[in-house]
Structures are given as structure tokens and as C-alpha cells.
Length: 406
Image (cartoon, rainbow, N blue to C red; front, side, top):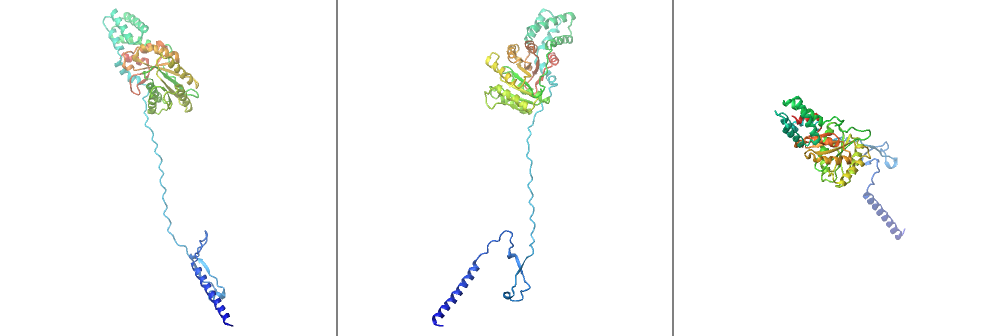
């Protein structure tokens, strides 16, 4: 072999050795690929010698058998306590429990007796030793000043004069008995006047009560107090704020309702159509199966034709749901005979079914009870004897006359 051939052979051997070294270095720097999910990690396994390990591995075909190591004991995790769920606190408003209507007038009799001079004046005159013509004139004047009215006054004086003369009565107790009988006959003539409120739930709809009157008589307050009377009788009530002209009238009515848990149907703007509000109130009463819907209306003067026509419209719109069961006219007792013309006009427009007399405790004009009943032919059903929330009472003729003569 010549020199050239030797050089070529040495070069081939050198290149082969260099390639082996490079491959070894490359293999040491290569990273292991990540294991697929669920594959066993061989780094945690131990090698168990096989039966063929005694000989040369390259000639005997020895096989490495890998077995998993014993599982590592772990401390169980401490369970995490679930947070306690606290029930939300429900705030229930403190509702007032109105006084029962029965017995209210009894409680208020003393107040009426102190404020009304009619009975005291008559008893003083009738118990005089001498009942001459001048005394009877004074008796007649006292009755007229009490707003009894001309015709009722004439009737009462004529009957009393005849009975006192015939019986020769002078004793105060006997005079009081005669006067009581005659006043009772005037206050409660027995002509079929039904003083009960028509507030019984009709089939499929609530009873509907409209409250009307002139400005300043206390209609909204009366509606609120009447709601208390009905709640005390365990009736479900809905209020309708159809007085959309007076500022804060709806707020005032809602305040009355909130105190006893009664909802108020109102418009979200001032000057809304009162007939629409009244219609919605009755609709809400039907949907909630309420017993009574009380509708407060705006005060209006009896000589304002447009306003009176609007009141008639409210009633007609409400009657699309069904008849209006009660129309109560609120009169200020201190106005006396001045309220009679008002009463006549309202009665013509909306067919008044009952009278509410307010402020009876602040006047000596108890005779207005007789006058208004004679003028309208409808009964006084409720009287107001104070500013307290439960100072509205069903009218009882016997208790009223007794209070006048107390």
C-alpha cells in the first residue's frame, strides 16, 4: 500500500471518530419530551434484575423489568367549611291598628257635649219657672242659631210648647226627656234613612265609594280616616288619588294609606285626568280582589260649571267597571246653612247617597244634621269630631242627641 492510500485511510478513521464524538455530545444535551396524560413516569420506577442478568447483556439478550415503587403516603387535605348562608332580613313596616268604629261616638260624646251649646241653652230656657212668649221666642232663636232650619225649628217649638203646657212640666229631668224625644224625631225621622255604608264586596268587583265636596271641607283627610274605619272592620281597601289638581294631595292620601297598609293608586304627574286615575283605582281593586275602593276627588265650588261637569265624568268613567255604590258629600259643619246650596248642586250632579259632617266639635251648629237631611233627603252617615286619626265615627242619632243634652 502506497503513501497516498495510507493518508486516505487515516483521514477516514479520523472523520469517523469525530462523528462519534459529536453524536455523543448531541445526545447528552437533548431534553426528554413531556409525557402524555396517563403515561407512567419511568423516573419513579426501580429496576429489578432479570434472570438473564448474570451473563453478558449484549450476548444473552437481558431485558430490564421495571416495577412501580410503593405509593407515597400523603396527608389528606383538611375539608374547607362552606360559608353559612344568611337569610335576608325582611323589614316589615309597623302598621297602625285603628280603633274599632263601634264605641267611637261614645268616646267622643263628652267632646261634643262640651263644644255644643244647643242642648244647654234649650234646657236652661225650658226649666224656667215661667215659660211666657218671650221665653219661647228665645227658644226659637236658639234653635235657628244652631242651624236647625226654619221649618224644623217651627215644628219643634210648636210641639214642645203644647206638651209642656198640657203636662205642666218644670222639672229639669222631665224637660230634658221631652226635648230629647222631639230632637230625636227631627234627627232621625224614621223615613227609611239607611245610615249603613254600602261597602260590601260585590261578586267579581269591590264596592266603590266616591268622596266629593267643596274646597277646604277635609275630603282627603276624611278618605284617610274612612280607610282606617274599614281596616278596623278587616276589609281590604284600595285608595284612588283622583284629586290631581291640588299640590301634594296624592302624597297626603298615600301617607294615610301607608299607616295602615293600604295601597294608593295615583298618577305620576300633576294635572292628570282624574277620571283616568279613578278608573285605574277600580281596576286595581278588581285585580287584587279588594273589598272597597275609596276615590278622593278634587274640591270644587258648586258654581263652577266646568268642574262640576268633570265630577260627573269621573263617576261615569268609574261606572264602566260597575255601579258606584256610595257617593259621600263632605260638609263642614261650621258653615251651617251656607252649605245647603252646595249640597243641592252636588246632589244633582252625582246623586249623593250620604253625608259626612266634619268639625262638629268646633261649632254650636249641631242643628245642621237635621237641616242637611231635610234638604237632600239623604242621611248623615259619618261625623268628624276632632283632628285625631280615629276621630271619624258612624253617626248614631241616639248617641248624638244624648251628647247634645249631656
